[in-house]
Every structure is written in structure tokens, then in C-alpha cells.
Length: 533
Image (cartoon, rainbow, N blue to C red; front, side, top):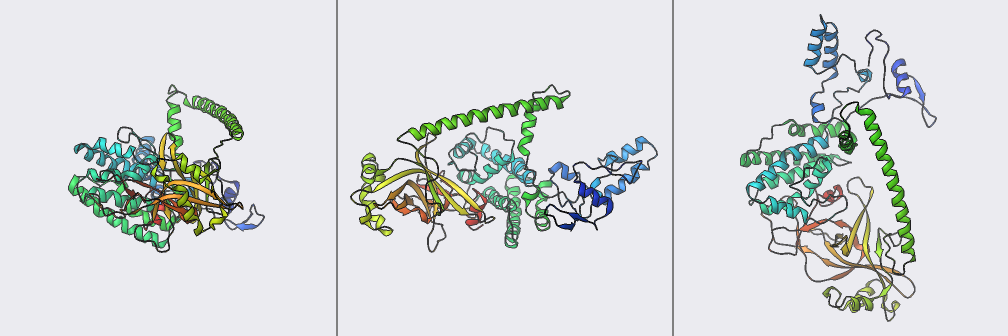
């Protein structure tokens, strides 16, 4: 901020000393950097994060710089306040006006959190969905479908999605990812609302990518056109008015991506959860002289968190010690060759294939288990290496490493194959590698995971799966990218080395069969791109 009495002196909060030196002496000086190399620095602030209301009040530097001297020349204090209040300004100069290429007003960029998750979705499309479902008396059915969605790592689960108010953007984003399968059979055929939600899903995931390319931006432009088209149809059918600022912001997102990079660089999502924490703490104050009260509340919360961490660490150490002493230890740590892209966890003790078959008698999945396994294994290992019995160790957890299609970094899926995972049976799905993938990517459902050990100690990781096949059944509205699979009764063995990554699938709610599943491509950015979006 600039002092009125001494225009040549500037005060700056949390600005590095080297930056002040450059501002005072000009950019054409060298500064010794942390690596010991002298460089000429040209500081700039390319963008900053603002929510919708804050962004709407921003103006260009040239406009504000013109208002400031006008206010200084006002005849009296009253006139000065009138000028400043008409632009919602204070009589101060912005320090960043001095920085080249750092207009603090033009630096307000597209914010995914407030423009989308807490904007177009929370404030507009989501209320419209609830209103339409209520009119059709399907609101309860929709909530049941959402509660029946399978669990998936990184996705929130919603047991009462229509009766609870959510305040964080991540919850609304997770609802958006799962909404279509739960909704489609509750709306008329070829519903404009379904198509609108789908194109909005495509748009939202594309603008949220942490790495973008020209090809992806081209696709984004296509999704924007489709989204605008179906918004018009929704307006015609339901009377929804899309004339609001956050809808208009869609027209600026491509420019922001090209000029300043992906939206995660300037999102307001960071620290958003802290707002809820502060709001909760503020509710414990008397509303007067809040700062010392908030500081004391925060100090107490930190102390409580520290105590909980120490108690948890003590309990974990005891549990680990007891597990190590147990002969029937259940190991939840990954167990496999470190060179593989997969590993297993939640492992049982070593058994034989015949013992497993006897233990699972009456379960058709394990009928003739020993014989079928012996017939399968010679594909990779000579049968005489196993002797009269096959030593196997069963697992209930599978870790799959894969390279993300989004930014080419290593990611990991945690998949479950258990009859009792947190009191629920859970058998996840995986993508399977084939030489020529069809239109429907090959998917399999996990029924059992186990490691087979030969007489000479060599191990082979095998899974008992059901290979899904494309279904001819179609929902009321076939949205862009809708994939439906059928789960047959036949079981197959497959080596885990052919697994690619986890696949998120859910029941086809409202269909006349209980073995139909949707493949959900919106679970995460990699899955979205992997399935051709």
C-alpha cells in the first residue's frame, strides 16, 4: 500500500526481500539464487484465486487507478466516500500495480470450485434434478439408488443424498460423478436433462484436468457446444433459466487454460475445508473479541488431535504385536514381487487347493476347484512342479499400479475381494488387457485372489473372475459413453499380470435383470480419458 504523505515509500506484507530490492532498484540487477547462480529476476503474479462474488467486483488496474486520484481530489470527505463506495473501493493503492505483467484484477481466473461444484451444479442443476424427481414421486427411489452405489476409493458414499445439506464442493463433485445411473430410469425416454447432465460431466472433468493438451482443449470446445445445446433443451422442457454469471464463465475457460495453464493452479479448493472448521469454531465464541477465543479453540483442537494420534499409535503398535503372535495372521500389507505392477494384501495362511475346495463345499464358485486350477496353471507353469497338492495363499485385497492417462504419473487402485469387508460383501471389477480391445473395454469381476506356489518355491498370482460381456439392454436414455455389461455365471481363472487397473461399475438400477452393470467413466480423470473421452 502507498502512503499518502510519502508517495515514494511502499509497504508490502509477506513479500520477499529480494522482490522489494528489485522493485526499488529496477529489474536489471542480478540476484544470487539458492543454487549459487546469479540471475536477473522479473517477478510477476500471473493469477490469483477468487470466488464468484469476489471475481464480479474486480476491475482492471487502469479503471481503479483512474478512480483513486478522482477520490483524492474530491471537495470533501462525503464526496470522496461517495466516489469510492460507488466502486466498492477504499482509498489505498494496490502494491501489485507496480509489478509488470501482474494486473491484480485481470488475474482473476476461472474457479472450478465456485463456478462449477458450488455453482452450476449445486445451485442450478442439482436443485432442478430434485425438483423434477419430487414432481414424479421418485425422490426416495433416487436416494435408494445412490445409497446402493458400490464403494470406491476416493469417492464419497451418500446414504441419504436427498435429505442432507452438503457444504463442501468435493461432495457435490462426487454426486455428479455417480448421478446418471441412479437417475436415468426415473426420467422419461430420451430425457434432455440426462443429456445435459452428461455433457456437463464431460465439461467439468475436462476443465478439471491437471494436464491439458491442444487435443484436449479441442474436445473441451466440443463439449461446451453440446452443453449449451442441451441447456437450451432443458430450458424448453423444464423452464430452467441458465442466464447467470457462472454459466457465462464457460465462455472464458478456454482462454484461461491457454494463457495460464490448468485450473488446479488457481483453484480456491485449497484450504476450503478450513472455512468449515473456522465457522464451527466461531459458533463456540460469544461473537465479541473473537480472535483470542478462536486462537484458544484452535490450540485445544490441536492438543486433542495430538492426544488422539498418540493413542492411535499405541493401539496400532499393540495390534501389530498381537497379529505377529497369531498363527492365523491376516496380512494387509502388499505381498508380491516388487517388480510387478500388482501386489496382494489381507492374506491368509498357506493352504492347499483341495482344502479350499473342501472348505467351500456347496459354493458353486468353487465346484471342482482343484481340478480346474490344475488344468489352468500349465499355461504358465509345468503341472509337475506342483506335486499332488497345490499350495495356495488366498488374498482379499489387490493393489494395482498403473500410469495415469491424465498426467502420466504412477497411480494405485485398492481393490477388494471379500465376503465381509466392513460387514458388506465386496467384489470389485478390473480392466483386463487383451490384444485387440473391442468397443466395450474387457472387464472382469473378482471372486477370489490367491498365490500358487510350486515345489521349487516359484509363485504365480491367479484370480478367479467372471469375464463380463456387452449387454444389448439399453436404459431409457442412452447418454454419450453409456456402457452396459452383463455378468454371466461362468467362472474363469486369469493371471493377475493381465490386469490393467480397477473398473468402477454399478448395478443397472431399474432394469429387469440383476446381472447388468454400468461402467462408470467419471470415477476419476484417468478412467474418464481411458474410456475415450
